[in-house]
Image 1 (cartoon, rainbow, N blue to C red):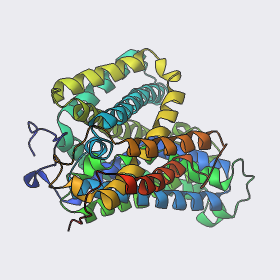
Image 2 (spheres, rainbow, N blue to C red; image 1 turned 180 degrees about the vertical axis):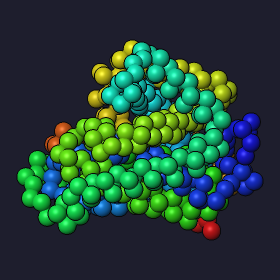
Image 3 (tube, helix red, strand yellow; image 1 turned 60 degrees about the vertical axis):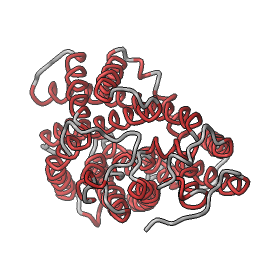
Length: 428
């Protein structure tokens, strides 16, 4: 795919633009190497004994792998983005609400990550090189570079991931080696520790922080030739890399009893690794955030010019970081993310059970203005998610997972009364 090609935001990716799963898998894996993943691992290992921390990471990553496999395989079967899948399931008007929620959340996180990137990079420059720079300059540079990468689309993000994944693997390996050099593996897991959080809370932390990425997997897996490739991508990124990265961050922080991950890297003498994690991880993660945001807007407003849209969205997210309004926006983003996770449950049931043929050759014919039943199921899942976040109602102990399960079950029941339901058809 050349850099001038469109990103197929409102149509299936054509056969000639589909690729093998490894290229897509590297993008997903690179996101798992980002700073928030290391930090999550550090927080979990410091808050609970190491044996249960390791088990919580294993179970949490297993859940994420399952969710990403389901969502990703739908993307590679239909070759449609998350937002076009929502359009089929919820109708054009119903999906507009869903896609705008996606866009606001992802654009908000774009700004949050620029803020985090700027603060972390400035601190590293000061502590390791004795250099200082204006915050706005660093944030503007980050916003411009990430926006330019996104303009060139999937191919640019993929190329960047191919270059950076090996480097991040080296950083992670060095981190684990340094940590085990201070305290052996056996001693690490034999050490007694008073738990500050429950085991369920630890699993929820693993899942909740990145479940949105698993839900929007179709945005990249739609480029994969066969649905099995999406499963392999989920296994690589969530089943393998995510677990390794969280564990490495957790072991290193636990050895030094320090919850500041940048401090840990500097104390261990791998400040170069800190620069790599902050710069490389943020670059790919935020480019992907902006890429998905542009897809959601373009799916809602198909006549929008892709490159101008990306520039406008990138500028908006960067300005939000400048103004520090994100400090007050984080709670809103947290709840917004929880609310749109149930969308995955509705789409999965609609695709595999209720109206399979609507996602393939009958795509245009099956399009409808709104699906009240899908919106009701989404609302049910959202209510459960919000109540779970406040610890009022909990099924699995993980609010986002409860939401997806409730929305899927609700829609499976409600869809039986859908007059527009089509004959079940399977795709090979």
